[in-house]
Image (cartoon, rainbow, N blue to C red; front, side):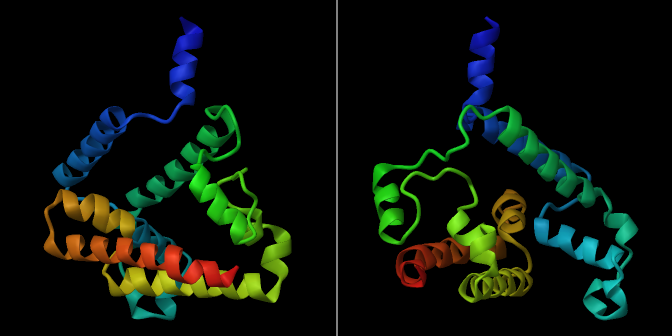
Length: 190
């Protein structure tokens, strides 16, 4: 019985378990008048660190938003627990076609981790090309989330839960951008 329970925990949760849990969290956030999003959490962290002295965007009462710092802590702790205690194998389960495409671009055929060492390994980070990719990507994510008025989690989860038209537009743009990057730009970077 215990082994069956552990086998269930070690597998990804099906949509009918994870979906209602996400919906329940969204209901609680809406009920308490809160909006979820990682970019707003990053804004709070920058404000706590004193960025309000440099830019007006970070000048606000961050103490009213400190609840979302717990979201970051929960994401870090939850990710650590999941990766180190609730995963049977360290590799990522990907399709054969995706594995073949990655091999053509110079990645390991089987994904051994969620962060490929070809991009995030110390050797890649210390190279001029790897550093340029990370800095450019970080800038585009930061600029894009600010320009769109929120990040993917804020728009696709919280905004769509509130039936906000701008969130639908932003989510469609995020997915279109991801598809363009994956199929038309990424193959030329590697």
